[in-house]
Image (tube, rainbow, N blue to C red; front, side, top):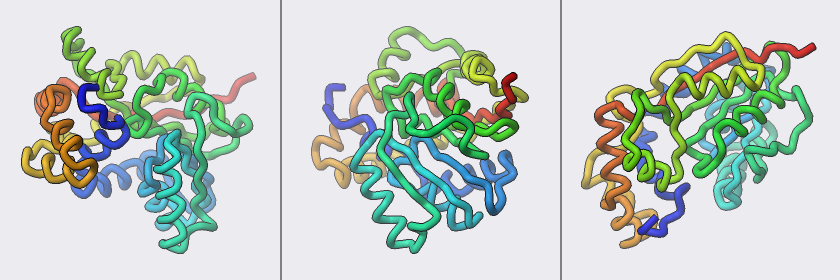
Length: 246
């Protein structure tokens, strides 16, 4: 990436979570029938906001996994500050090789925007492996609504995103033993990417000074915003049930 800004930092800058986070979390809770006592795992937890939201509302043990060491440090600090350290735990790990035994969690939620440059198929396979039989696997994923131009696809991949069309994402789930699949948009009208130029500049500056400003004004981000606005590139929720084997 010409800006040399870490993909995790740039994607965080581009997310308007103050607008979309609460509705997305509430929808996820509905999809997985969240309730007290069900153990949950977030794969791609970033700085822990989602894990803490989950733990606080459902008073359930929730673990967050992220490959970024700094993000996990921030998540642990937030958990202590919120008095949730006994419910919310975090560790740094490779999302394609989770440090858990098979069939451990009732619910596994994957957030691919927090896993730049990760292999989506392998991540879904690991999420399914650690989910208990008849448990729920849900993923928040970037997805193409139509086949992109090769140049556009390369630009988006340069940002760390690895979108697939819904049929491909669903095949990853089925191959991993997850069935009864449903797909819906997590945020409509391209609202999962911040579109306001001034806001982008301010957030880019706060994140990384001039380097951040150059990144948010670059061709990659302009392309991402345009594709999200046109809904060629969407942010989707895919949900399924982990089928028992044998």
